[in-house]
Structure formats: C-alpha cells, structure tokens
Image (cartoon, rainbow, N blue to C red):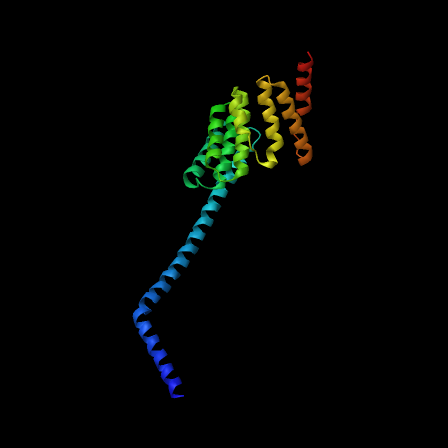
Length: 218
C-alpha cells in the first residue's frame, strides 16, 4: 500500500511538473484550436454568402438572356452582371456558366470573336470537365463557321461522354469543309451511332450523310 501511495504521489508530482512546464502552451493550443474552429466556421459562412450572392446574380442573368428579344439595355445589364461575377466570384461555377451565356449572346449578335474569347475563358479556367467540354464543342462550331477547321478538330479530340455524339457531328462538319468526304461520312455515322446509344438526338445527320453520298456518286 505504501508503495502504491508513493507511486501515486510520484505520478501526481510528475503531472504537476509537466503542467508547470507545458500547461501554458497547452492552454494556448486549446485557444488557438478554438480560434481555428471559429475561423473555419466564419469562412464557411463567408463562402456560403458568396455562393448565394453569385447565385442571385446568375439567376438575374438567366432571366435576362431567356427573354425572346434582348434589347440593347438588356444586353448592357447582362454584361454588367457578367462583369460583377467575374470580378467578385471569379472562381465560382456560376462565373463559368455566365461566360457560356456571354458566348451565346455574342453569337446571336454575330460577334464570333467575342464568343470565342468567352468560351476560351471557360476552357482555360474551369475545373469542371463537362463545362470545359461544352465550351470546347461550342468553340469548335465557331471555328468551323470561321473556316478554321484544324482548330475545330483539335478541340474535339477527347469530349466528355455525354457530348461525344455532338462532338462527332461537329468533327464531321469540319472534315466535310476540308473536302475529306469519307472521313466526314465516318464521323457522321459515329455521331448517329452514339446518338442512338445515348438517346440524345443530333439533328441533321441523315441530311448531311445524304448530301455527302450524293457528292461522292456524282
């Protein structure tokens, strides 16, 4: 029993010495940990508020561009919203989607250079592979329209699976524009197969195939 008491006293003394040497740093660590938790929660709240603000702006943008006819004042307001998203929420998904809408507005205004710039921004800055693929697909279409078919083909090398059928169709357009009929036919046929497998229609393929077949037989 005496040995047990002595052992307990020694343990108590050891604890007192340890506390004397380390207690202050332990308290400081607890305080810092508490501050860290508080800071983390504050950051989460800040992130949530930022996300909500970006969402509100994006919804306003959607409401504008979905109008049947967007007047000059509406276009100006839409550009302002896109600029605010870019400056205040540059890393958000909403900003990348806003650039896609920006490109659509530019295409409607027949400003293909501005549309290409907006789409390239998504390709360069988005962390979302689907959005990058969608921007690449749309930029490829613009490049075909501008006659830059090699650039279009370079953008269509590895599309996301949900966009594979559309990418094959645009690849066919680029190859047809280069008078590579057999390759274009193969691309359109691939687009048709992928479209049927995915259940996602790609319109105009039969007509394009018929036109190429007629050219080959003439």
